[in-house]
Amino acid sequence: MSLIQALVLGILQGATEFLPISSSAHLVLVPWLLKWEFDPNAAFIFNILVQWGTLLAVVFYFRHDLLEMVGATWRGVRSRKPFQDPEARLAWLVLAASIPATIIGVALKTQVSQTFENPRTVSVLLLATAAMLFLGERIGKFERTLESLSTRDALWIGLAQALALFPGISRSGATIAAGLVRRFQRPHAARFSFLIAIPVMIGAGLVAVFDLAQIPDGNSQISALVVGFLAAVVVGYFAIRWLMKFLARKSLSTFGVYCAIVGGLGLLLSAIRG
Image (cartoon, rainbow, N blue to C red; front, side):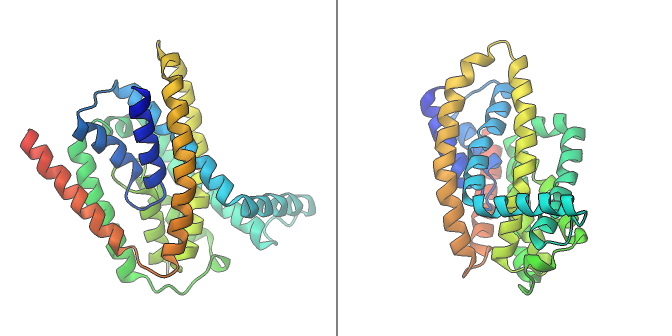
């Protein structure tokens, strides 16, 4: 992978990780469209590790929230009242929501990795993302805030995040839509979606680092990873800022239309190319 390719994919990752249009789908379809050929294992590891760039972006954006949650959790543990403070309770629910993706990610690691090699499947899953977004907007009542979040809500949204291990299912799209189905307001559903991404992205990145160490020429990818990482940090931060403002006044339907169009075009091109 050249540095230019890494830069393009890093920008793409940063722009699409938090927008509900599936960053993983774009990281599969764009190289396929441009006929960029990478070693499948190396490409999969690049896709996971460059997510750490967007991880840093979301941590920086929510840094004040995270500090409050960590502080409240520590005070709760010391006082033996771990769920009394709302911020501590939210922190525990973020961890609970991360459990489904962790379990399913370990169990289906091979199947997930293989999906990255199949643009047709990715295109179909983009259509599934579009359906989720439309369904969330259709069913959502936009009544609740995160203060009313329950363990059942967290696990429901966590299951949606687990689906997004497969490229084409947008993580933010699936989790925000799942929150809308549970009647949360869009900005509150988005906030929880971004927070629960942090533990899963850390775990996935650690696994990818281990896998990178097993590749004989893994060191040759370091420069590309750094370029992709930095691009994803900068673009990802501004993408979060934009989306939080967007969701305060507009629906997810626009992104649903986009996913449907890209998924449909991907299937069409896949059929043409055979």
